[in-house]
Length: 216
Image 1: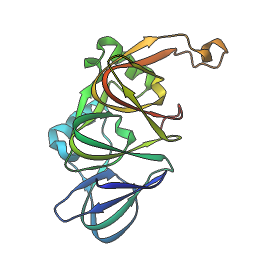
Image 2: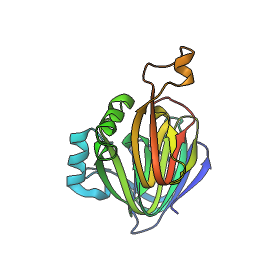
Image 3: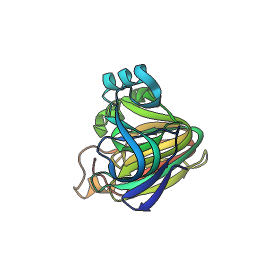
């Protein structure tokens, strides 16, 4: 595992020769050793076509390549940081949530309408996060950012999970998502935003939820 949580808002990464890390530009807080930081013009492990796809879909986030030998400390904007370890599956995460990830992971973009049809597209419009999301696939670890910390909720075939779309951070596993209209307690007491929607995730996997409805 490349990342270790130092506290709720900072992670430490050990960099070895021949190993690449990617992070958001400006996320490096400090480092020790012989480490270099280079603006990444190809958009991570997915290469040029992946970068072009993300720019067209609005999922592009400026990255930098981290390599060398040493230790690097990452954090950004005082946001809470959570480390997710992948063992061959795919993580679906909004691009602006990514703090850093290992170069062993392949980065891509997925059209949200392909998970939940038209309702997947509505989800993008409601959340303001766009109709596309970033994917990271393979073996490696990812550090994501959130407001108020992150908690993990298991998704099982017998028990789907319903999430406020504004609190959604990421998910992985064999999971389908759809957006449904629902009248919640906040609408009843007049505190709602007028967008009474729930994101339903079903199948087998994990969803990561932040303890806030704020956007990054």
